[in-house]
Image (cartoon, rainbow, N blue to C red; front, side, top):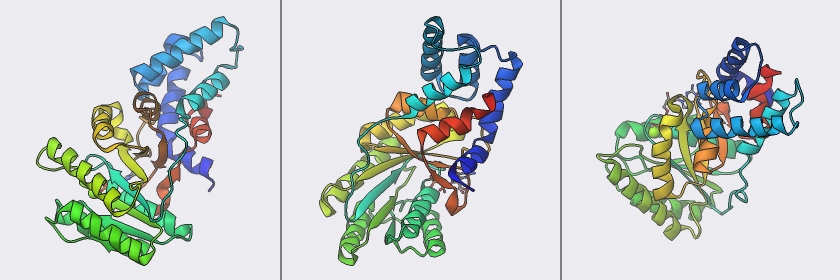
Length: 297
Ligand SMILES: Nc1nc2c(ncn2[C@@H]2O[C@H](COP(=O)(O)OP(=O)(O)O)[C@@H](O)[C@H]2O)c(=O)[nH]1
Ligand SMILES: [Mg+2]
């Protein structure tokens, strides 16, 4: 299956919901019906209002031809999803820090990323810096075995900063291409968590100049726009450079991708459409907009 096909199937629920919304109003696309349909898929108030307002303006200016509403919407959504941040900085080892609240899919995503590195012929290492729960380390170790990627850790209760520093030293010594660091999503308090992540981030830079090269915030689509407040907190404390939106399969809230782009201003890099290693897809604004909206044509 090609990428568009996989996205289509991952976005099925959201696309059907949008299709239903437009069917319900007899395909009379007005700023109001458009805004309502978008809100139902959790694009967030700001993004929905922006699209609806732009639609109104474009229509008045005669830029939307009758029957051309869907094409206009597709182009607008694609533009909103396109955030030019100059691309990811590269490094050797290339260090990716994976952050986010518990249960969003951090560990799974870290493992999937390691699998992608391997597929691309690069050597990879996973680092279990979520030392808060023993189960979290075991989960990453199980993934490591499955993907044939070494997992470095120090066991439950170890200082995450020390784990990360040692692991990066090892990666330097081994000449590892990609290091992916899995972190805790919950500690005793949120303040502790942010302080720990800030420290881990600093330690990365002490071990490898310029690291981390990418800080990926994992958000899950079912949580939708409710996850944005926490997302801002992570952005403020850990300097998020990219977003991974997981669990798009089985939720009609896929529109949240627009809220993420609009309200965080951080590019989405990957989307998760299932639990298997191959269910992590690179994010492409054009393909995503197409897979989301093509039912409307
Ligand atoms: N359906 C679906 N499940 C996912 C996806 N990503 C992760 N999961 C599941 O979400 C649950 C929590 O994932 P985990 O990686 O442990 O989250 P963490 O607490 O952030 O590390 C697991 O059961 C994963 O298999 C996805 O894209 N789609
Ligand atoms: Mg985890």
